[in-house]
Length: 428
Image (tube, rainbow, N blue to C red; front, side, top):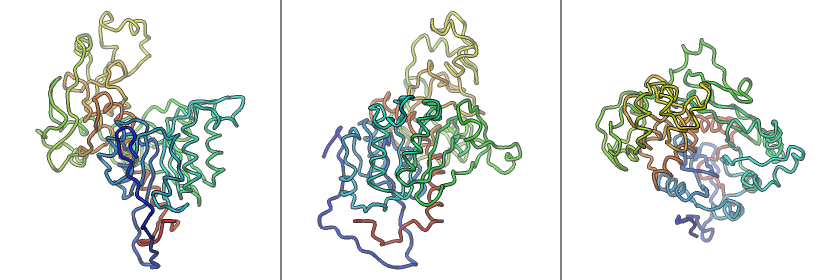
C-alpha cells in the first residue's frame, strides 16, 4: 500500500516458516522495536546505535516518514493516521507472535481530559492517539514499553491524566517507572527535559543514570521528585557537559544565504563530540544559512552571547514585547553562548521563539546545527521543505538520550533472560 507518497514495506506471510534452534549457547539476536509517532526517528536512531532493530514505524506527517525511511531503509514505515492502522494486521505482516516484540516505543500527545470524569480519558477524541498506543500495546504484548512526553503531562488535570495513564498501562500487565530526564545528563548539548515512562511485564526498569554533570531549571511538577538531582561531588566522577562550541564549532562557517543541502567540511573537529558526529565520507547535509528579516538583522546586532531581547533597544522590539516584563520570555531573541548549553531546540528557527542566534556569527541556526544540538549524526539527512526539516529536528527526542534509555532497557532484558537466542522463533 502507499500512503503519503511512501511505500509501506511489510513482508508477506506466505511461504515463510520460522525455525527454532534449541541451543543454550546461541548468541542473542538484535532486540526489536516498533516506533509509533516516530517523527524523524530520533528514538529509533538512538536505539539503533544501542544495537536494536526497528521493525515498523508510523507517523502522520509525510515528511517525517520520508526522512525516517531514508535513514532507516530496512524498517517498514508508513505515513498515515494511526487511527486507521490495524495492529493485528501489522503484527501478521511482521510475522510476530504475541509477546515476541522487545520494546514498543511511542510519545502520543495527551491533551483532552474531563476533570470530573477521569474514567472517560480514553473516550475523549483528543486522546485518540494515546488510545492507539494502547491498541498496539494490547495487540503485541511487548516485553517492555517506552512512553515519552513533555513534563507538563504531569500537571494536566491536576495530575489525574498521568495517574489514569499509569492505570491503563498497569491494566495491561506492565510495571511502570516514571522519570523526568535531562538531555544534558547524557551528553546532549542542550537544556531539554522529557518525561519517560518505562514499563515491563517482569519488574520495574531502572532509568539510565546520568553520564555527564549538568544542572538545569526544573520549574514544573515533578521537578523535585522525578529528576536526577546531582550533588556537587558528582562533578568529579561524571563527564562535563558538552558545550555549544564543542557541538557545532567545527561546522562550516557560512553567511546568510550560503551553504546548501549537501556540502563538504572545511574545518577540523574541535571535540570528541564533533568527531563522533561527523560523517566519515566528508559530507554533511542541511547546512544552509536561513534568511532573516531586516528588523531581525538589526535586532541581532545588539544581542551579546548569552543575551536576549533585553539587549535590544526598546524601539526595535516587536510591539507586543515592548510591553513585556523583564522576567518574561527569557530566551526570545537570544544568542547562544559558546561555553554553555543550548536552550530547548524549537520546531521553528524563529528568534521570536527562542535563542537561535549563533554565538560568533550573525545568523540563526541551520538545520544541521540544530540537529547537532539534538545529537543527530551528520550522516542523518532531513528531507522535505526547510520549514519541515526544522520541525522534525525540534520535535525529536535527542538521539543520545534515546540511546541511554535503550541501553537501560537492554540491560533489563538481559538480566531477565528476555532476549531471544539466535534462531529462536519470534513468529507465529
